[in-house]
Amino acid sequence: MSGSDVVIHKGLENIIITETTLSYIDGEKGILYYAGYPIEDLAKYSTFEEVCFLLWYNRLPKRKELDDLKKNLIENADIPWEIVDFMKKTPKNAHPMDIMKTAVSALGPYDPELEDNSKEANIRKAIRLQAKVGTITAYIYRIKEGLDIIPPSRRLGYAENFLYMMFGKEPDKLSSRIIDVALILHAEHELPASTTAALTTISTLSDIYSAIVSGIAALKGPLHGGANEKALEMLKEIKTPERAEEYIKKALAEKKRIMGFGHRVYKAYDPRARIFKEYFRKLCEQKNEWTMYQTAEKVEEVMINLLGKKGIFPNIDFYSGAVYDMLGIPSYLFTPMFAMARTSGWTAHVIEYLQDNRLIRPRAHYIGQLDLKYIPIEQRE
Image (cartoon, rainbow, N blue to C red):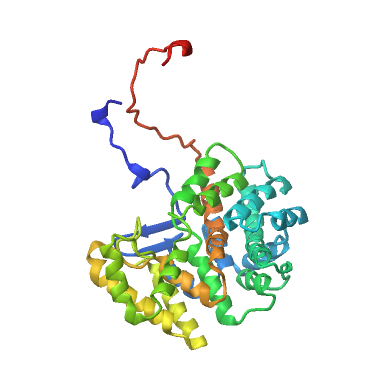
């Protein structure tokens, strides 16, 4: 490859590496589909368990199939005590994503089908993994807070069970529905860095646990996961809607990034952000606490007025952190919750990619020197 012939796509931007039936994004129009279904309909009518089935099987389940999946998720929610013990012994300042990454990696050898990469076996492993990452995420919270572990319930749905394992009591209907919808909205999003990392790993014919560990490792980075933490910090710093315009204009003048706005793919309003905003409003209505909602609305208004013409609008991170905060979920758990939801999409992509596998092996354009003369070490200055 001569230098004049090379086009470098930094960050693999807009490079298509595979075909998928899992999700479709039209960033110019702000449209997102999972397996052909609009995200708005899934958020309104579906459940996270049903969306998991949709991603793994590429169709909606029948009643018995959904009941069987729910039962499977409940029966596989426990994690080995040795892994719980490891989680308890991690340093107090350990990053939650490092705990999650290592716990998922440790689960691999416990799975009797670890080395079976058939589609059927990988779906069974995806179910076991999905069941356990919810427990791992809740346990990270309990351990970080110095609280006793609460084993998963045998009768609650996935979102309810997660909140139950966190707080030790059955959640109210609105809180459960908000987490259910949050999991749906985070479940799948084509090929961001974490999904690409998972596909790169599985393309070597590694195992599904290793692929998901790769996804978790990529999501840990602040350029991928964690933006909702920063957006929440910003809203708390602004405090009131009256301070929003001055704060935003000052930050932009200082070339600071406004977290929760803009997206590599979306050049319109992120459809997931609209859904989160509506649940944020419902939660504020239930609690009769409006200050943060009004502050966020004012920030959104100012940003769209200033930068909307450049295609910068709210993304999913802008409202999600505020919603979690109002539910009493600490910010250090936001990214593990993202990983908990995205495990469904990661595993679905792994299963799909293996049906027509090709080792992912990109190239780099060399710009260094050539034909240098080797000088023995004794003669080097």
